Structures are given as structure tokens and as C-alpha cells.
Image (tube, rainbow, N blue to C red; front, side, top):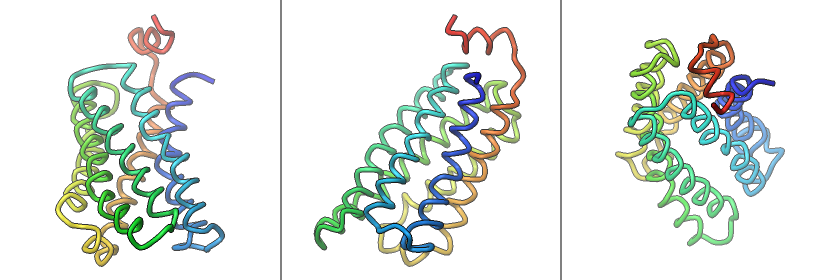
Length: 194
């Protein structure tokens, strides 16, 4: 399996995995998993986000891609910690701590994706429209989560869910384009580690 195939699969898992876990298996979906198990499985699936962006970063670099990737890693790290604290269901205080961290953490990750999208726009890794779509979708999710606190976010889930789903769909499309990307001398050298 080529690196670009693995990279594309990781983007697809990053887009679909959290939706399947949270809305399909978790308490908000079928209820097959407890909140603690949902958050644990989602954390493992969400590992695909920084890995997918890192793999793409190794093909073509610019400052926007590098800065965006760094922000993705920082936001993602804080986000899974906040979800783990909330998902552990230890006490009302731990739940409050997790919910206090979540908006800043996850909005930071979306900010990183937005900046990375700008970086992709400045390259030929993806069609310009797809890089722009990635930037717009992640900017909308960032703005929504950055402005509101967790209480406001929870009371406006009818807005959050389409923003989250929109970004997820764009990640799946990025994955498909990654797998179908034509080999050039530059990308084949990057994938071979030359």
C-alpha cells in the first residue's frame, strides 16, 4: 500500500470515524457505548487527524502548512484531554473542567485546519476549490466554537452538528483526492523519503 493510499484512508477515517462513534455508537446515537468508552474510542480514531495532516505536510511544505499542523496538534491534544476528563464521569467538577477546556481546544484544532487549508491553497497538492472548501468549513467551525462557551455550544447543537459534519465531509473528499493524486517527480520523491 502506498503512502498516499494510507494518507487518504487516514483522512477518510478522520472524517467518518468520529461521526460513527459519537452519533452511531455513543450515548447520543444508539447508546451501545457508555460515554467513557465513546470518548476513549473517539480519541484513538481522532489520532488520524494529526497523522493525516502530517503525512501530507511531508509531501509539500510551506509556512502555512507547518504552522497549521502545529496548531492542529496542540488543539487536538487539549481536545482529547478535555473529552477524556468529561467522558470519565468522575464528578460534576471534572465534567465542568472538561467542558471548560473543550471550546478552546477544539476551536484551536479547527483554526489549525483553516491555516493548513490556506497552505494547501498555495500549493498544487489539491484543487484550489478543495483547499478553499477545507479552509471555509474549518473557519466556520472555528468561529462558532471560539466565540461561544460550552453552555452556549450545547444549546446550539443544531448549528454545531452541520459545521462538524461539513468539515468531516470535506476531510473525506480530501482523503479521496489524496488517494487519487497523480504521481509527480516531487511527490514520488517525498513519498520515497528522498
